[in-house]
Image (cartoon, rainbow, N blue to C red; front, side, top):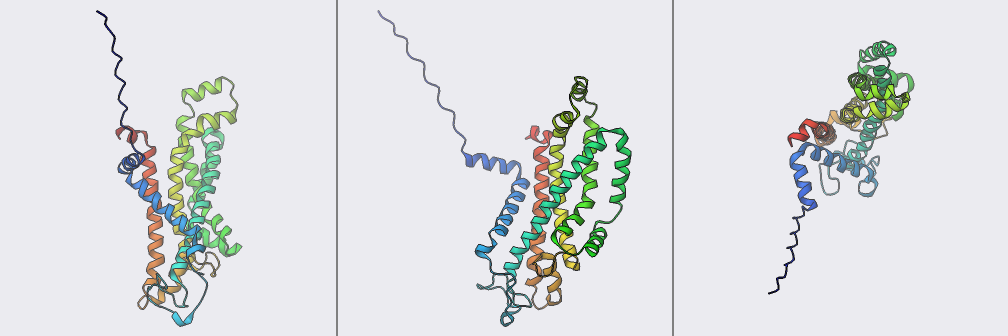
Amino acid sequence: MTLTASAPDAPSPAPATSALSQAWLFTRRHPTLVTGGAIISLMALAALAAPLFAGDPSTMNPAVRLRPPSAQAWLGTDHLGRDVFARVIYGARVSLMVGLLVALVAIGVGTVVGLVAGYFRMADAIVTRLMDGIMAIPAILLAIAMVALMGASVWILILAIVLPEIPRVVRLVRSVVLSVRDAPYVEAARAGGTRLRVILSRHILPSTVAPLIVQATYICAAAIIVESALSFLGAGVSPETPTWGSMIAQSRSHLARAPWTVFAPGFALALVVLSVNLLGDGLRDYLDPRTTRRA
């Protein structure tokens, strides 16, 4: 009698999780991150593609001034007959550009200064007192003074908004560096003769990445608000450039007759700032290891 060994059953393939299911699971775990990121991405794409679907924001047509929203002008027209929708979309370019550049410059400069202040004890007291002095000056007043002295332009506006934000980044980076400066792995690298540049870049700087990403979103939101406030006061960019703050300022006298001229830029400003804050809150929860372990 011949016994034949039966071949082992092939393992059944594990059910593959579709990309759509993974995206839905990520959305359920981090709804604020997904919501904020989606709105900001859509607004940025609309601002970049504005010439393709939005009209000329500076074209005036007094014959159609203060017209309500219609198929020809989705958000109506202002007191000079300009398309409010086109001006809102083009205004997003200024706000998002100012917010992004302010966040990048503040994070870059503040990180370098914070590393120096946190690692070198002799420089800590000097840098800390200097940053405290800058933070004591109200951001709006400092920006107005700089714009009044140097003139109104986008780059002067960015510089005026960046200066008050740098001390906040410096204090954040300094606190992180102080907590890891005497860690065993840093002491081991220092005892092994590792160069200072390598210690700062490979052993200390990675610990600051997560909080800096979250801080960058808050700086971006604050910069957008300050830019709109300065444009509302007439201390922002040139009046020919459409911005949400200047649109609100120019249309506030027509609020009772044409409320859409104020509500449209105001809603866009509130939506973008809220989305950036939601993105920051979502990134904070996503990058927090305690939240990740609970999930």
